[in-house]
Image (cartoon, rainbow, N blue to C red; front, top):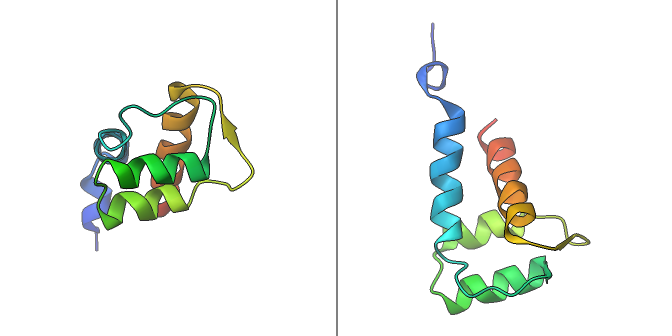
Length: 82
């Protein structure tokens, strides 16, 4: 029997989820670590879902620019939805 996930464009869902996280990262300074990202999200009033998503980012990585960070967030969201 087909599952609802079979009919959902996961790239579209992931893009919406990334956009939800990105809205809570205004004013972030680069380069940024996971801890920097979490702190900025908290300052901007991020909800638990956003903070949980950021928490999945690798601890040791340093993001040099927004594209690197947003790509990493998208990768983590796709893994979670997998």
